[in-house]
Length: 431
Image (cartoon, rainbow, N blue to C red; front, side, top):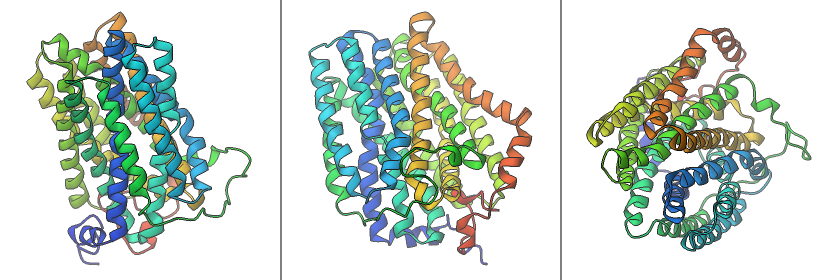
């Protein structure tokens, strides 16, 4: 194969992908929906602080929201697998819009914390599974050789919504924090309309799970298990940064709303890193791909450690920007590998599990911040944001090598390679 043919992450494959009208419609729909997700944690943090007077209350709202999303995602994802898409996503998105209005009203009325926590829980539970459903649509309108560049670009698209979401919340919060929940309402309505133009996907025949019960055992071994564990630890890291940095900014004499700009900077460098990796990375075996994932996770977490030690806005921004370069490459790589390892009738469920692990990690990180804001400091929470994923890297490197060999040694050839695509970028795990 020529270099261009051997690189689905290259410019030729990306041009072919963007020439696909269904892909462009999918990008529009998923990006509007993800804006809701990227705005929600910061929106709840600021709305809770405005309603009850403490960042700790807002952090608890964010934690409960993420926990609800994590607990519901496997069940909601399995439901999406057994229904026609995108029709199955209409009701959750409309319900999300209604819940945002109810939460904004409750915050404006300064409702007690238990009421706000209940609404936050529903905000996480109701739309859970929608993100997995979007990814499960891709194989229905993309050729196998297009999946690798699609997942690489998808990781960059996620960063672009993080570039947009938190700054929008920060800007609107200067008027009133609860108004950002109104913007999420609008985005949920737009996403519902945009979904009507996506290509339909009929429910695939069930072959691996009885209809009457949830069986996660096939998803909790081998490569998927590694992906889920990595998502939890990375989520803890992000959840801690997301909820601790606004309080830390206030401590160093800045404004909490500036976190929106810092989040955009982090996501911008992450998007650049994802594009560079998608275009330049060489093919690798599955075992080598796991090694790359651990390397990216180590770089992300190691560069976060100085953020907690920084004494000013500029140094925080520099370290966050450096850490961001490795986030999208990590996400693009592991999500593509997960897609290759999942059976056709478990795609939405598997990706919802991935989202659940990410949300579970964010919820844990937010809860950790809420405790540390009361017992210690935001600075301590930020130090832990780097230490927690670094512990996973060290543990995997020192103690789990036999398990990693067992997980990758039994893997079948990845489907993208069998179909004629070789791997770079997010497909770098192809044996």
